[in-house]
Image 1 (cartoon, rainbow, N blue to C red):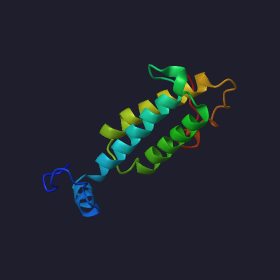
Image 2: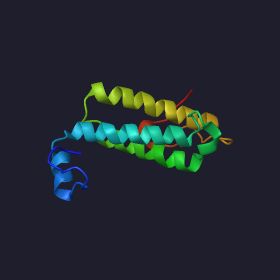
Image 3: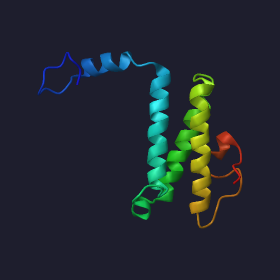
Image 4: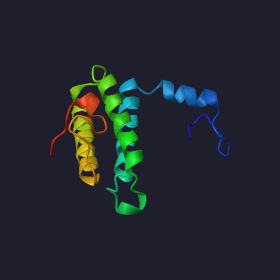
Length: 120
């Protein structure tokens, strides 16, 4: 909660808009990317619970969205931010390939239309 919001009340739209207006675009993009990466890792079964949350169809969508976001924002975020995100994306793509019973052809896996083929 912000200091302007009295305790016990939900912040209004104006308060939320003011708070988000103070956040740099790069920070928003990186936060969204990290959230997509985390969700994809869960859906790939890479967490402690592993198989309990594994859903490759959902993971494919998340990895595809992450690749699209990184591709679209590559010129807007610095290499400092982009490099670790790309490394994480590649790791997720490789994990997806390993988890698939019938792996996609190189260049046809999730996000590979944006990144090119990913090889182990």
